[in-house]
Image 1 (cartoon, rainbow, N blue to C red):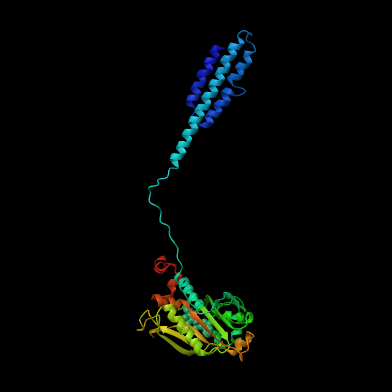
Image 2: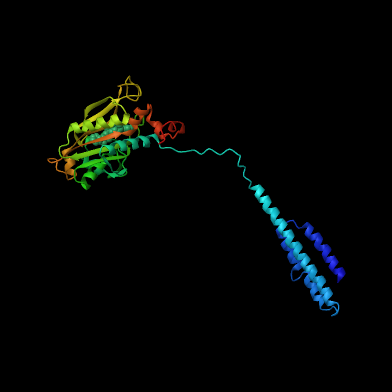
Length: 342
Ligand code: FA5
């Protein structure tokens, strides 16, 4: 038995020297201490030993079992420790490395100016309403006094979705809706995107932004309209910007006008943006037509009102000296990052 123990111990010694992983230790556990292992075999042989020798032989076997168990446990601990150290080394972070610069986004300049416009007009007593980008022919045209087949419809080339549904060509599509849902006094603005099937050029796009204003009350006059436009434009530019009001025709106002401001891109000397006139048209405006008031269930004998539709893109071009409207939609970060971020 003594020899047998010595042989098993040598074999165990060789095996444990070679075990380099947790799995290998687990395998040795099964091999030496498992049911079919040498220790269990020796226990069986113990039954054949004389009763006098049995306590001593039993102790040898038990000591061997304790010895193997301890060796396996301590080797396992060492290996676990080494594995953890290797993992920690692999995941080591160099806190002295310079950080990676994060790109911070900013508002598009059109959004920025749109917000400024909204803030100023809220300060002048208007509240904000939003109309739909996809709308019916009725709200975009008919309620605004454009009967079917009226030539004035050609003033705004339309993207039709079907005979009755279209992409709104102006934010004036809010007007009849607001009148249907509210009683005067009404004092709202409607910012949004508008769409026209036009040729794209340096000053015109198929997709641009407007802010509609609508004020209806008793005794609203043309002078109120001019004063409101004047105050608003001066506030937006931060100085008394030169303006020009020209008579114009829109079926939903009477009288109607167009608002020009001095072209700041060329200081009025003439450039492609102002078509070499020194002036840039930024809004259509006028006194709400009595037929439109009637379509909105408002009595034109009792109430009057004014409205305007301001083109934001052209305002931004003037304010920031941008010579081409197309840069707004080209997503060039070199262009976009030049402007205020707040
Ligand atoms: C209108 O859209 C009218 N709804 C404005 C209005 C509202 C008149 C209320 C009366 C009462 P107009 O088509 O002129 O009008 O457009 C208004 C402004 O939008 C223009 O002055 C211009 O600044 C801008 N605009 C028009 N077409 C384009 C375009 N293709 N690209 C960029 N801006 C444009």
